[in-house]
Image (cartoon, rainbow, N blue to C red; front, side):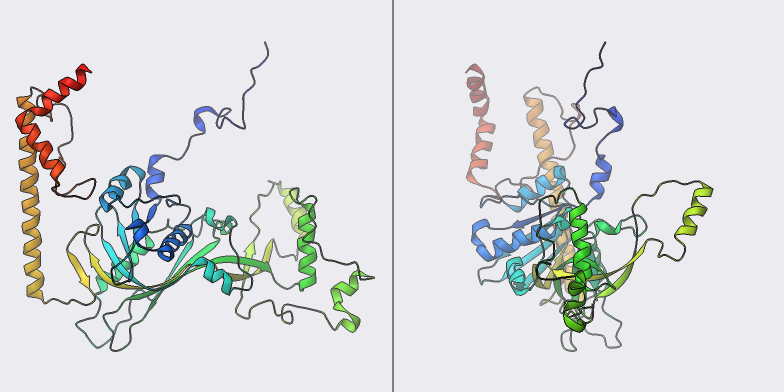
Length: 451
């Protein structure tokens, strides 16, 4: 009997069976995921809306790139969905009535939240117009960027100021930004996967501005090219790779034009007496600050026996052992932002203020505020307990039994804590509670069941 045909291209894992599994839930949960949201939807304006799109592109691939906001959406809606979707960070952009653009960076679900004022920003399209040779639209966004942070911890100083930012808040800010992207292992991470750099540089405060925390954000693409070769020779090398690739059949855009030359030497030397010979130093296309690095060849090699290894070592003796020198250059992609941190608070946008740029409190005032927050927490716990008791009473009155017997969760929904539309204590909720107390909902349920 003939063997049945198995589709291997469209049916993934058909030949391997259960061994070909996708990533587990634990591995997905370790990868940071983000949502870049504009609060107010159409009220922020076209420039801030485009800035949000550029930030989403910068945060790829682990971000909600096609998120659609509505005016009716509230912060609680996004917090509710962040749990099932595995979202760890929220970046909220908004515009105040005075016209200031603000950004909030929050860690879900417990916080903290960093408040920033976007003092200046440049969109990606503005950055491309300013560059002579812009780059983008390739495979740079398939992997997360490399995060580089500078001056996030202020150097120790002899003078003590009341407005100086505490050390624990500086380390907290560092930890929040470091958790935006997955950590990189230098031993295991391949160099080819690092294609972008996100640079965060903190401006150290001046002598009279100890209480300011300003961060400059830049976004670059990493480009490399071989060094030690002249520009014509690099073009010939690129043309050879273009012709050898199977995808480039029929394309001639990368080939140099040698129609007006009698010999290849005229192209290499560059005119009579070599007056037009171009090197890395004379071409003007290379920047003086390019860093040269040695890149080891990472392609897979065939396992050889001892005799074959000795033979290969004799042939490759004196060669570079697969080491190639390449020049690393950064090309800016955008966007640019200058962020001034104004406030740090516990929780997700609703919690005790840990630090404020303009408001400074004494130790007595801090203790007083701690007592106020502790009182609010106790009232919240008491309110939850009363709500739970009321729910149990109504279930027993209807003959449904206790909710704990059915294996339900102990935590009940708090009216003040959760509101789908952000309208606390609206008339519709009060009307529904009155109908429930009067028993009118039971009559309507019977009518609905009867059809």
